[in-house]
Length: 560
Image (tube, rainbow, N blue to C red; front, side, top):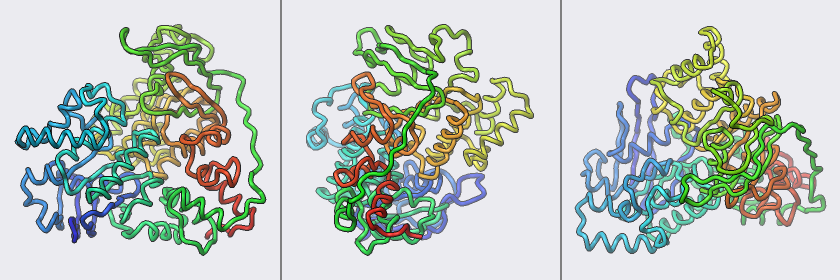
């Protein structure tokens, strides 16, 4: 039975000239696990918000949204609030109280649920999610993964029938993201909860789904099961989202094989062993030679946010060289973002040295550390927006760096074309999708023409096309001797684009190497392609490398 039916749904934002959604029709049966995917700005968030009337955007709407046999507009606020749950992309934006136990009780108290019922529901929810140890903690003390888990628990305590999630793992490290998705799968299987999740990263989620919906420019391009979705891209290899598939499906699509398309690591390993030899088990390896000039150097740095709090950085030491792209990976709360703040001079260590181009950071006077020197893209791009339109933000930023009106227009034109954001210059930054905000924020950062660029999660909320744009910009900058330091949870992005990678743990970088050596030696912080090939092929960390080895061992030709 269909729990949700969408019939010819169209939506247009105020003053917009094109539809955000156009003639969308689909249904989701009770108990289904449904993925909503597509490029940034294609309408995923708009569609999800329209399904929950309390947060539906304002604009012109036509068509029907039928929930459990009733028009969604006619649902009572109480029923909509309790039966349709929503999880936002940014964990910070959904936490509303000061402690964990308050957060769990908040929704039920607002619905007037009796105290004994609240206690029972909270108790079983806490036990199910395993959050007993931090039940009395302040929400401000939680890591990003814990906050997102708390958001999910706070929604589930309401006992919803339909759960809507807008890229809930975008800001989580790989381990926390995997744990979060495992919980979602259990909720779907054990409780029969209907799930619709908007997601760019399909690696772990595609194989556990029942249905995939692909949006393109506000229209529904594809609706079907996961294997049909993978086969769709095998027939359309040039599609912009073909690289968004799980590694096993991407490798399959690069080769001619009559086997069933694999969707996860287990199926991918079987696919390799049953279809290809491993007489040639390694590709020729490239050497990496960096510049001898160090642009960023941390020496025995210690830092804590307050005197009585634990140390965040503990004797941290590492160097980054001129023209190098250095990626820092690690779990939430390990000190990666803090390190960015220290390099940028925004935070001061109580012990140790920070050298920028060989000069102690504290020796830079006035704005000399930032004028054509260091620029930072923060994890939350909204922190950079101060004006009513993207264009105005860029113009004011250019003026602050002393550019003339003519140079400003030229610079904005060049950067807008580079990032493909010409169509959003007139928009308010807060009206943009997460991916569009990220690119607009990067545009503002690039105005300063930095020689050292610090990026904190630059690919979160971006589709594969957006990630390629960021990767190309980074490559252009490093080729021009700009040093780029990227904090990221995106292991595939790091594997494809970094010169070196470092793993942050317990306040310091504990290992660093070239991507091939780094990821080939890791078990958890590694690529899906490496997990598929491990033990069969050596030092293959990218899908293209695995496919190349298959061909060398008598595999098929690349699908055209």
